[in-house]
Amino acid sequence: MLEFQNICVSFPSERQDRIFGKIRQQVLFDVSFNVRKGSCLGILGESGSGKSTLGRVLCGLLKPDRGQVLLDGKPVYGSRAGKRSLQNKLSVVFQDYTTSANPRFRVKDIIGEGLKVRERREGEKPDREKETAALLRMVGLPPEFSDRFPHELSGGQLQRMCIARAVACRPQIILFDEAVSSLDAHTQVQVMDLLRELKEKLDLTYVFITHNLTSVTYLCDDVLFLYQGKVTEHLSVENIGRTADPYAGKLLESIVMFEEAK
Amino acid sequence: MNLGKRFLHNRTAVATALFVLLIALAGVCAPVLAPNDPYATDILNKFADYSLQYPLGTDQLGRCVLSRLIYGIRPTLGLAMVTMFGTIGLGALLGITAGYFRGITEEVIMRLVDVMLSFPSQIMVFAVVALLGVSVQNVIIANVFIKWAWYARMIRTGVMQYRDCNFVRFSRCVGMPERFILFRHLLPSITSDLAVLASLDVGWAIINISTLSFLGLGVQAPTPEWGAMLNEAKEVLTSNPVQMIAPGAAIVTLVCCFNLMGDALRDVLDPKEVEG
Image 1: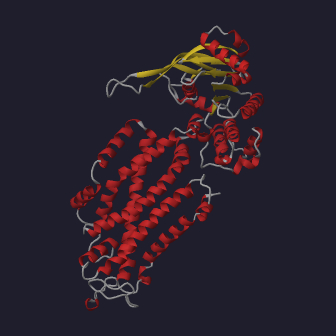
Image 2 (image 1 turned 180 degrees about the vertical axis):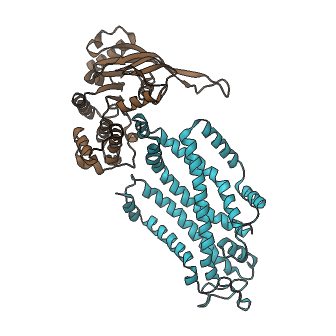
Image 3 (image 1 turned 45 degrees about the vertical axis):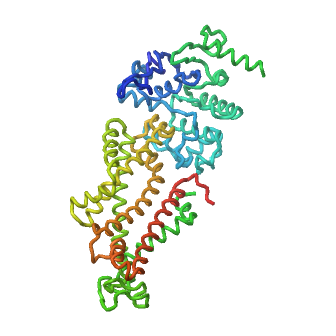
């Protein structure tokens, strides 16, 4: 349902020869892939490989220099309607949960923002309080949390709340930008189990950006290796051991060695 | 804890706010509170000591210092407030515009700010007042004119700090309207900075207006204004040094009070601040 076609992104370079130089540094080279409806695509890569830039292109915040993002066959960039339809169908969970929520909002306001998006789109007014409680329960938080401020929650709880907010706007696709990376191992598993459950229940499509191979194998159907802004490999998780790409192979090897060393 | 409760829990905030309110109230009720007519001269009774009839003595023309002090609240505090709202309003408007819309708008506004900041501020005030003529309203215009650039720059920094925050990105991503992002996310985030700036600015404005009055460029002669009163006291520094204590102490107290209030408001407006 989501298709990337030859996406190229570059930023103005920090180092310029002249004062008003226009040297640009290219971050993404000709990235193409597609995401099937109802699947979970993992995007793997080391820091600086362009994962998060790809995420920003995906959620409509960064217009690529070249290429097009297609959502259900319609282009996202270039028209207001395309952007609108992306905003209606996509939601996002970020890595840094401390800045993900406005510190001046209570949990109910934060989730309320997601609900408001839904209200605007569907034109009906759900019972805010009931919906918030239901959403909190869905992500495994007690409904009494709705009166708390973000700084009164732990990291795992905050990330769950962010997931509740993302789900509140009833999206079809959710983008996770390193969403579990900053949690401890135990909470990571809990959150990933929650994500699996939600995916089944709400019929969602996930795009899961991470640097952690284990979480990809745990959650995703397909995996895409990104190395220095280029897609080096795109295959399903079952076949991950049969990769022909040297970078992906190296990454896998290092994990296997790490496992053995334990 | 909500805002009102946090405010009431902060002793400094409550005390300073009450004090300022009290002063403002005294200014409003000046005709009732003042023991004497602030303009009535009694040349025989000049430089009178502290007494029941003249609680703070009299000045070089035999006018009651306390009455003049109380009547002086009106121009002193009033003008400072007007100046503050003017500067903060203009500064916030341009700062938010620059920080939020970026691009060419930001360039134009910020270069203008750079130009404004490169002038020595007092000289600019004198220049403006000299150009437009000596009057209260020109003093306010001059003060707003030189100070807005500071605020524009600081507020822009605040907006930039939050505009790339994840919670703003989320709102963008799911297509919340711009006004929601601006009024629910960005403005509340910078209010604590704004409150501190505003209260510090009132202190600054009081001093600046007093300075101008002291130099004879602000509030004119018979009107009781604290700076102007200090100016008059300066003339009789050798014969009656006590006369400058009252207006001097009044200015110091009020300015200190506003500065403390700024500090306390910052704590109040920050939900993360744990009450002690």
